[in-house]
Image (tube, rainbow, N blue to C red):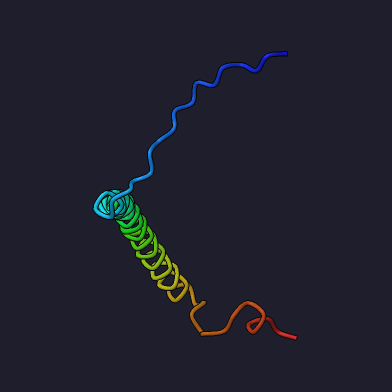
Length: 84
């Protein structure tokens, strides 16, 4: 059975140090660009998390205020408030 013709292309290895340096710098630029995008995404998610935490803090403050108005703000938890 004859082998199928190979259509792959052989890429030349950069021979000169300048070529290797240029290629390495291009790869570094690409990696830095990807990292910038990832950091920007992380900052956005951290901002959303901060907003959620502030919302929870506000809700907890309202809950505590309501509990105090209804006489439940004595500082004891559910188990501590039950009589034995």
